[in-house]
Amino acid sequence: MKTKIKNILVTGGAGYIGSHIVEQLVKTKAKVFIIDNLSTGYKKLVNKRAFFIKGDIADISKTKKIIKDKNIYSIIHLAALLNVREAEKLKKKYYNNNVLGTLNLIKACKNSNVRNIIFSSSCSIYGNVNGSVNEIKKPNPHGYYAYTKYKCEQIIKKYSKEYKYKYAILRYFNVAGASNSNKIGEIQKSHGHLIKNLAIQALKKKPKVFIYGKNYHTKDGTCIRDYIHVADLSDIHLKSLHFIDKNSKSLILNCGYGKGYSVLDVINVFKKVKKNVLTIYSNRRSGDVAEVFADVKKMKKILKWKPKYNNMSKIIKSAIKWERQSV
Image (tube, rainbow, N blue to C red):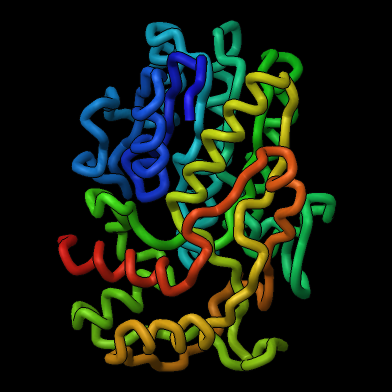
């Protein structure tokens, strides 16, 4: 997708999702800069056509200097701590990193040329919904990680008029899979992502996969989620950026496929692709909701978006392919 937006800063661009977005951005005429402290990111995932800066958005003076010196016009903000379970135990750490980090980034945009901000939010801000959810629903964050994402959304909205930027808040559902090039994928092993963990276990790099809870009020007692391939999610970022720049209009959009899979649904598809999967039930994780999947009618209509990888078997195969060769 072509864009006239020249200078783009991607925070957290050395991470799983960030590296996939950068891979698509460098195919445009944009000049792409990455700031990442590498706490969960990996420099080897960074596309060589992007400009990497090791740093932390907590350092407001350094961030401000980057925005000014590189004449940043658009920001895609992904830098954040992501572990739902850990967030319940380390609330101060998550508040400082996610909320105050976002506030620092936004304040660094004051009196700059930044006109577009894309923010990676989460479907968890909706709370415990029963089935499909659209963007109109009032947020009711369930768990501390969700709370930090909601606070970040509020910050981005609050300063948009004063600092003269438009925003697209993208509420991610469950992201999975790996690039078709197989050069980038998810390395971080501590998030508890189901599909990644199943791929690791199937290749005998992990003894078993935990299923967290079997007594939810769902069809089979396990959590239901909407999974989206990381390449399709990356495409949504580019289309959202193009839209808000062209139309000078802010957006809040769900990012999923609009279909819910239970944990057992995913495992059953996985077994068809790779039979040797060992699972064990464990207690519920604090912060998890029972069922949530996206209503994506608004996103598809506004962005004219069509998914390319909306197939659970394809998502799983790409995850296994990546895991087979990854360290």
